[in-house]
Length: 285
Image 1 (cartoon, one colour):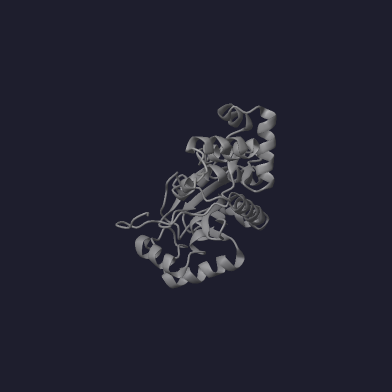
Image 2 (image 1 turned 60 degrees about the horizontal axis):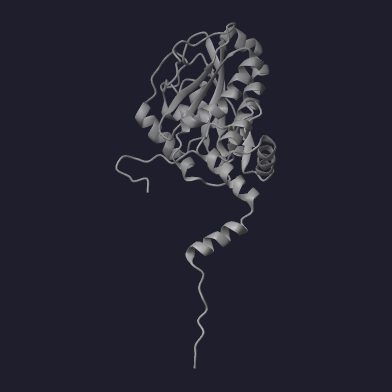
């Protein structure tokens, strides 16, 4: 009896059949997402269209679909498109906290414009708190000691205290052991117990103050910024002469808090999460 064998399509034939069955718009949308994953600073529609050989109309339709589906966000200030972080691309796991500075700088600029005071941004990387952005005001006080990369005196300045107040007990204790509580003025808190009580008040109020604790005759108002999981990751603050602070401080505090909340919303939309700090000797795998 003859046995009939069914012919099995070759691998190339199967691949060709799969190619014929694809939905072009889905493939193009995925290509946009892959491209944006490699460009965390963002691209505009023309750049995306040029790189993927898409006409502008098609590119906008695909981007709008991805935005509605929460896979892509559009920066209202720069008009650049970025991934939201809804999909956990491996690239995002290795991004440094400093990468968020480009996302938060517009909020620093906006706060400076609203208050006319010099505005600062600090970032917490899991070990240190460092100054990451400064937007100066020609009419305001400029704390010359605070320069980009400065990572000291965080127990005395509003920027640092806004972050320290939201660290867990272990993180705070480790930070204090590593950095100590140096005295800068007669108002500087140099006791661990007093500082912890002070930080509890900051957490209750939602903002921090530097009442001439770092420099005489200079005060600061700060507020915390949180990542998409609600963990503190940065802070924003303004500095001003103590005389102006005592007369206008109450009216400026809401501006600082609003800017911090807006920055937090930005990170929430981007679904940005601070990468875990890997200690020496540990593996990233």
